[in-house]
Length: 429
Image (cartoon, rainbow, N blue to C red; front, side, top):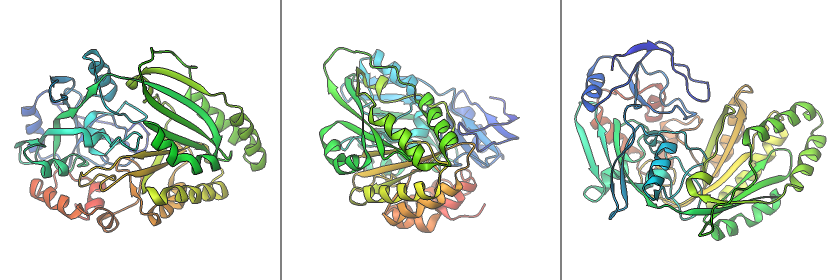
């Protein structure tokens, strides 16, 4: 368990934590000792895939890398008890061996299960909620060293508070997660004009189990992806390479950026003749993909009736003022839930995510699109870049004050509060 002064950096390469103590407890007793020691603030760290500084500026980082694997499976209830540091891709493979699967996944599976659920990571599908909503119970170590076991059947209100916690209530060590039988999906990928995507998106979300589309900046075209349940045998589709596609878009920007009309013409021509692709495989092999090119990301979850108009406005601003942007803009829809800090609390939301290459900087892009998304009633993704503090967040979340009251009760000295959470909850450190 011995701590060490060391450097740490997130996947996106923007929050180096030089000189912090990195602890890797092998059991709960060792974790208690770390939390009790006078090395704070203390933040639990998983895979480092959040773009927001949720673990930056901590004096002590508690790695959950020793807390991995499936502890038990209750097939009658459809619940798998998993350790909090398990990576999603490890769990999907292990569940498959048991004939089981997560109901839905996001577009990457490198995160830890605790980090993904603490930030309400999501996939897409009008009837499919974010990962956090599938939590049936959890175990969490509080600042005073006590372990709290939360069972959703006995205390649904407390579970609604703890499912999306930003790590502010304590360190989650174990999660009871709802799972389903292993199943296969049929994936289709095709291109279509942005105008067609905007006019047909709602129908496509209703028609398909999973639907999403990616607008390619400066092209007037989108790539659309759908997934539907099938009993067909697995069959491989064309081997796509998302990283190569991103590099091609960057080259187009670099070579044609001064002539936007030519950039638009070239990219649109390529997308217009994009061949429809399809594949069949188990859900965990199709829903998530590899992302190896570092980037920055801001994502807002918007009401269904305002989201697509906000998207159009954001696209117009980006294409007028951000010629450096080349990453696709991702658009998904997620079912609502009742977690206190879930961006999907109260009903379905359409998520719009804008990205920038890590070497280009993100501040200008974020400053231009964030007001558009806020004006449309959007809530930020907790794990992605945003500029909101307590005043605005409290106006967006009906249960924000309730959550903060619980946080102060469980962590009165702010042991789990770093600079970022201090801004979110409006407290001083």
